[in-house]
Amino acid sequence: MVKYFCSSTDIRSAWDHVVSAFWQRYPNPFSTHVLTEDVVYREVTADHRLLSRRLLMKTNRLPRWAERFFPSGMARSVYIIEDSIVDPVNRSLTTYTCNLNHTTLMSVEERCVFQDSAEQPGTTLLKREAWISSGIYGFSKPIQEFGLARFKSNQVKAMKGLEYAVSNLQGTSASRCRRTCAPAGEERTGKSRGKQTGLFLTVMAKGVKRRAAEPCHGRKQLKSVGL
Image 1 (tube, rainbow, N blue to C red):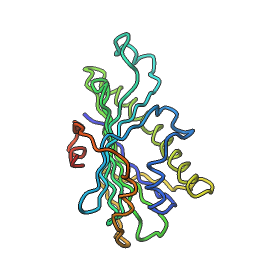
Image 2 (cartoon, one colour):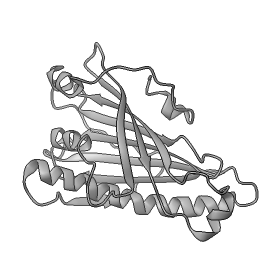
Image 3 (cartoon, rainbow, N blue to C red):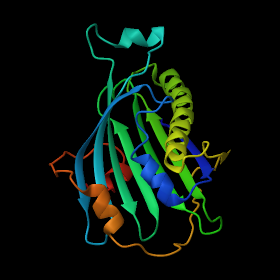
């Protein structure tokens, strides 16, 4: 059994600003649990999409009951792989993330889609989905419940961190957001308001060396990134 989470957010900032802020959101005062971030792969495709893979290291304090599942001396840090696709033609940013270690205790897989809104100029639509599972026999349900609660808390911090990065880019107060829960499977899309050249992505990718990386093992959604 897997716990599923879904939410939708209207970010009252232009898509270009949100995408730029996405790459500059660390460090920020709301995400002090994110310790490091490294780009391990980046490529601009022939159709002007930017494919990226980043490795992040995070830490979260464990509840006392969870300590029993960790052997003494095992690292508490969690390594996260993040695959992303920036599509300037359809004006969307899609990210796929999953943890690489401690997967027996808990596996968290997340997909986010940042889509430019055609109906609301200057607004970016964010749909966030997550799948939480555990392989601990007899304790999987409470662990998944804990993971869901922790994920909800962290995604609020992540949103504040992104707003902080956007406000720094704009030089204004943090963007206001209107959050509403969306039913599982509901899609919110908008028509593209125009095409961009590959210059935007070329600048973003400049100076980053390409290195081979193993694919993130997990859901089919993660594999669909094509890296």
